[in-house]
Structures are given as structure tokens and as C-alpha cells.
Length: 245
Image 1: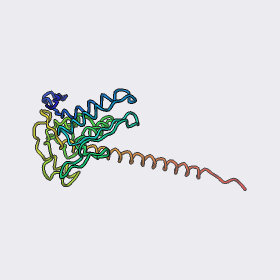
Image 2: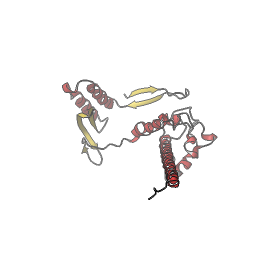
Image 3: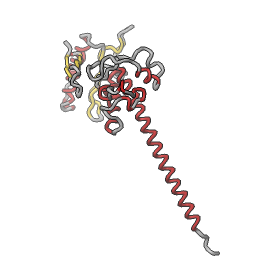
Image 4: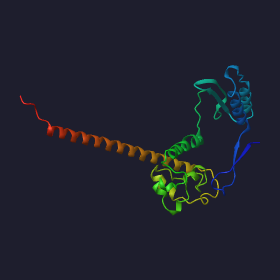
């Protein structure tokens, strides 16, 4: 059976528990790897990782796996098992296989970028999305907050409707703003690619406005300095007299 982890989201108390399922074979590899890296590297026995990986691949839970362990700047263990492809034919897994990390970009890419802006005071977690994406301004989207987008509780559909992303942004934002809610924001949980796509666009716009503001401020400061220098030179020229010869 898969491990079931119940998580209750806050501050929306109405959101039901979220259940995350992880395959036991994958967990076994992770747990063994984490346990081994917590001890001294010099006296390490990596057989536990080998056994867990072989079991995971042999059971059919996963086609293949690569494990890399590091401490500081040193790679202390790296090995591949199984296949990197199973159709149309099997291709052996290699240590340099490039994986599609897919939705891992949500916590490790988008979320970190959003929280970086929150830390800088440029984004408010409980602020409405319309504050940052003009297409979502208005009473209809007031309850779609950044926090709810991050916690998949903003009422948006799981997947963007067909054709809404075809024009690319910013036009796609206007199309997504017209999509009806699947449920009232803050009342339920539904894993949503749509929400994180909009968060990514929000990050892009906020950073772009920040860069523009920084550039404008720098340009203004340079202009002011040049003006002061010009005035200073003018004053110097007005009062300077060549010596009598």
C-alpha cells in the first residue's frame, strides 16, 4: 500500500485534508539514502541503497532510478539502476540521464521565486492576484489570493482549458481570467496547474517591473549627477579668470 500523508492547509479551515501518495519502493530508496548520509562518509556501507534500488526496479514500481549523494562539494556516491526507457525498447539507465522534473518546478522553482518576492515585500501572500495581474482585477477574483494559488485552493481548474495558453502571455492571462471557477476560492483543494502557471506569469511581471523601476531610478540618478556636474562646470567657468600675463 502507498503511504498516505494527511495535511491540513491554513488559514482556510474549510479546506479538507490533502492526501499525498508515495510509492513505498521509492520511499525505501530515499529513507536509506538519507539515513546513510547522516553518518560518517569514511566508514560508509552503501549496500542498503543498492538493495532498495534493486527492489524498487525489480518490483516494477519504477523502471529505473539514479541516486546521487553529496556532502559539501563532494559527491560521495552515485549509481544508476534499471532502464531510462522501456518503449519501444529498453535503454539502460545512466548516471547522466536527464529527468523531466515536471511538477517539481512548482515547489523548487515557482514557489521559491514567489517567496523571494514576498521576502522583499513586493508580493503579499494574502493579496489578490489582480494586484499583480491586471486581467484578474475586480470583485469576481478578489478571493483568488497568492496564498490560495500556492496551496491549490483558489478555485481554478486543474488544467487550463484547451486553447487558453496558445496565444502565450499576456493574452493567455485574459483568457484564463474568463474561465469559471470549479469551486468557490478557499473552500476546497484541487491540484491546479492553472494556478501555478498564473503564479509564474505573476513572478515574471513583478520582476520585470522591479527591473524597470531599478533602471529608471539608476538613469534618473545618473541624469541628476550629470546635471549637477554641468551646473558646477558652468559656475566654475563663470567665476574663473585667466591670470594676468
